[in-house]
Amino acid sequence: MERNTRQRDAILSVISEAGRPLSTQEVLLAGQAVVPSLSIATVYRTLKDLAAEGWILPVKLPGEADRYEMTRLGDHYHFKCSSCSKVFDIHEKLKKTTLLAPRNFVIEKYDLILYGRCNECVPKHK
Image (cartoon, rainbow, N blue to C red):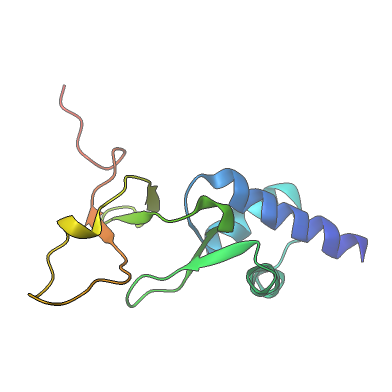
C-alpha cells in the first residue's frame, strides 16, 4: 500500500503544481521524476480514481484524449497551442450577454476552447 500512496501522491502533486491541464503522458513523465517505477497503467488507474473522488476533472477537447486538472480551479476556459499541443487555462470571465446566440434562445451553459500558438511557440522578433 505504501507504493500506491507514493504513486498517488506524486500524480496528484504533478497535476496540482502543473498550472495547466496535463495529458496522461505528461503526468507519467513528470510523475516518474518523483517515482521512477511509475507505470502508465498506474497513472490511468489513479487518474480514474482521483476523478471519481472529485480531486481532479477531465478536460475534454474534441477528438483528443482527456487532459486533467484540479477541481478547485472553478469555471474557466482553455487554450490549446497548435504547435506544441499544450493546453493552458484561461481565467478571464465572459458574460452570457456578450455571447451570440440565436434570437429568443437562452444560454444555460457553455464551454470555450481557443486555438493558436502559445508564447513559447510564437516566433520571437529580434
